[in-house]
Length: 283
Ligand code: A2P
Image (cartoon, protein in one colour):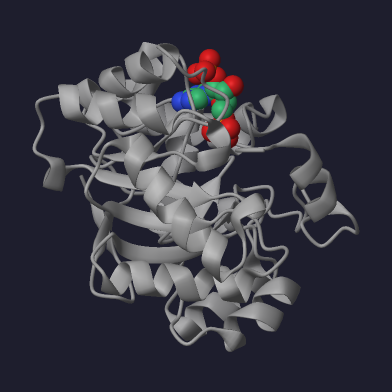
């Protein structure tokens, strides 16, 4: 599996398996076992996905050495602020049943993010986390918060696909060497995108499906991608993107599909409050 070099010296597999919206107590365990069998070595969960325990059990039961699997989790909004974040790191580790996480992200950029970041930095120094990062930071949020951090994030996990290529944000992140992790890398299964004639033509040329062309484009752009699938064939196919390369012309064609807009706007008023109301990881 191809890896991406992070600004803290660590490496991350370019394709990861995301478990958002997969049920706890079984389904996530089965999906992660399947993904690991198919060759994934990077699993992306979060406290607010409520399935960290399943992920941890699947990693343990896989028989694969712990250091060969890259495990990401994320702190939830309820635990922002220094003291709460310190505890949240330990709760995630406990639920995962692991000694360390490879990456821990600030899932949502609201509330006392700076205090939470300080706790994550300390947990990294203590060896509980190898790399730390952020998520859902727009250019506006990134510019307001990251300059207040003493260390740079390794990644910013944001919505990103050919429809929404985050060009402005990438300029800011590139200056800091912060890598982009893409959620909804397939536009959440957007039919218009997957049936785009130029993409379908490339798929025919390379003997791949449209999703694989999109993921290959993103990996060639330097993104870390987290495609979601519950279909065993597509789960396996989505990591089978390293035996071909898109040409410069094809890359340009795909770059031209950017509309500059996604499905979620983290800058919209009230997003933090709405998320906090809808997802509670503890009382
Ligand atoms: P399925 O679970 O039936 O494979 P995203 O990762 O952007 O959220 O997109 C996920 C959606 O894309 C799911 O509906 C998934 O459906 C579909 N999908 C996943 N991989 C592919 C692929 N290679 N080609 C087409 N659709 C895909």
